[in-house]
Image (tube, rainbow, N blue to C red):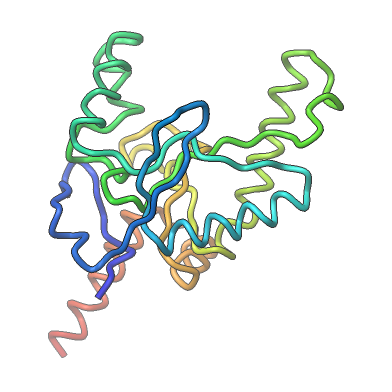
Amino acid sequence: MKDYLMLINKDNLFSQDMMEEFEFVDAEINSSPNKTFVEAQTYKAFEALKKELDKSGIVATLNSAGRTIDEQQQTLDEAIKQVGEIEAKKNVAVAGASEHHTGLALDVRLKRKNAKDIRNVKYVRILDRMIMYAKMNEILEKYGFILRYTKDKSEITGFNPEFWHIRYVGVEHAKEMKQTGMCLEEYVAKINQVQDGLSVS
């Protein structure tokens, strides 16, 4: 059975056998001739999300999706060179601890269809960017996605907020997580408690 709630973090490392039940597709990455892998249902849901955003004049593309262990290490190494190890590890998972290994996590880039309509002033563009990501966040659960790393859950997830990083968990779970305000760590812990309680009774 496919486990769309699999928890990957520094305490729950990835292993390839977790993905034996899943299928994958290739997807294009922004400004790159290379392709990445995405879990098939996740990509189907992303395509549907893209269509709704497109109706609002927002174009959604992928900055990143599936990554191998080696690719994750390269991403971390590059971040360490730029900001140092301590800061880098607040934003980039160590190899083996990244959701990107699963193909269930997507880094999404948003831009306006008619970017010329936005004044070429830095703060105006930043504000518009925030508006676009807020719009995406409003409708994520309809397509089975959650915003994985938020400011209010940083102490639990171990990462700084990332308004571009979404994670597929399935529509039912995404809606419940949105309603309760739980992050994935909290939600999985709650489910495990319920299951443990049922197994005891």
